[in-house]
Length: 79
Image (cartoon, rainbow, N blue to C red):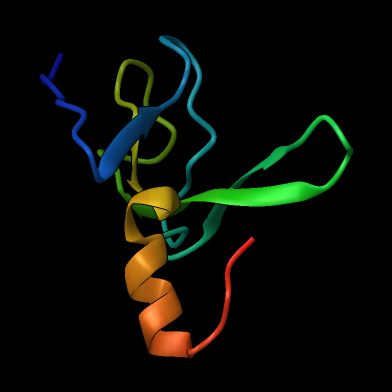
């Protein structure tokens, strides 16, 4: 199994035996439903090894790490 490392701006997601990331998903959102039933984007699909291969997590950019940059580029506020 390949070794993966998380960092401030990268997160790894996937169960040890199941990974739902597919080829062509790069740039797509990783979202979670909050307690108040709203949805929040917490990641952007970056890459993975193979297509839904066991023991190979999907690699995602962490959206919160980039919020200041996103806000500076869009001129808006972020929730």
